[in-house]
Length: 180
Image 1: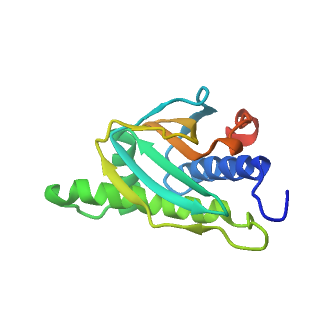
Image 2: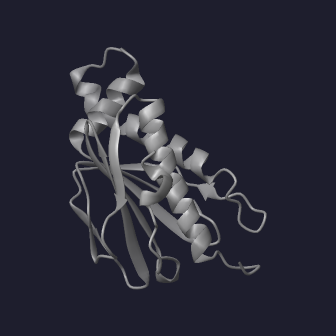
């Protein structure tokens, strides 16, 4: 790695750490079984989103956007597991579901970036933004998308990474170590 640039290997390791920590968190903290995780295809022009999406940005001398996109059933299971039996009024359920998902990805991203400093600087994280029922995000010139698909007992989720093309010329080699 050069003194002033973040290399693609470091980006790949960061992406793998986020994927792995997401799976660990769902299994260990939320008791949601995960049956499969894999890198989904190559770079695409349009990123398809699921029913509920929460996006945050990591700033590590480059800006890496991370969008966690959930099927409704999985988002609902995250809320149920996070609420630990609390009564939630029907008119508050949608908002609480979004908050539970945002809290989960904030924890996951914070845990995953530990130890991934760049040039001695800690990677910063923006607060998550929740988007309901968005259909897709279109890629802009100079950016590229990579996606990790996760299959759980409660539904599917996608972890989308958006960043500069030069950091996504590699395969995530995601099958190794992630499904353990």
